[in-house]
Length: 125
Image 1 (spheres, one colour):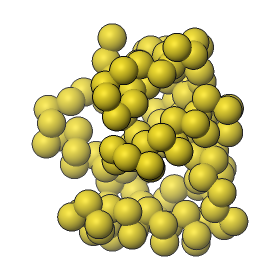
Image 2 (cartoon, rainbow, N blue to C red):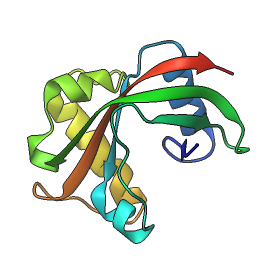
Image 3 (cartoon, rainbow, N blue to C red):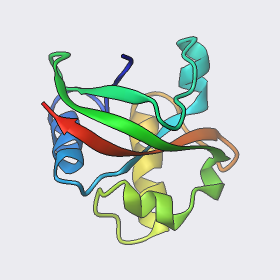
């Protein structure tokens, strides 16, 4: 079973995993370039993944319910809201994600290709 690690290690990953386990976070977004860089195939609907904590332990099994390739500018409010991170608007989501990826060394532009995943928890560890 492949794994999913949300955010970055430390407080952010813990926070995002807690949102997933509470049922508030049912989506996430990644850079397509990271899949290419890591020679990682895209997830697919029905695939089950282990959701990992900072120590590499599974905290849940999630099932992918949707995969959408889009650009940064074309992410919908529906998807952004499903990320469950408390953004009040699509503009807030965009600003927060721009800051996150810039801190990680990958500034995004409107045309930057993204992978938008939706999922559900099938088993908490």
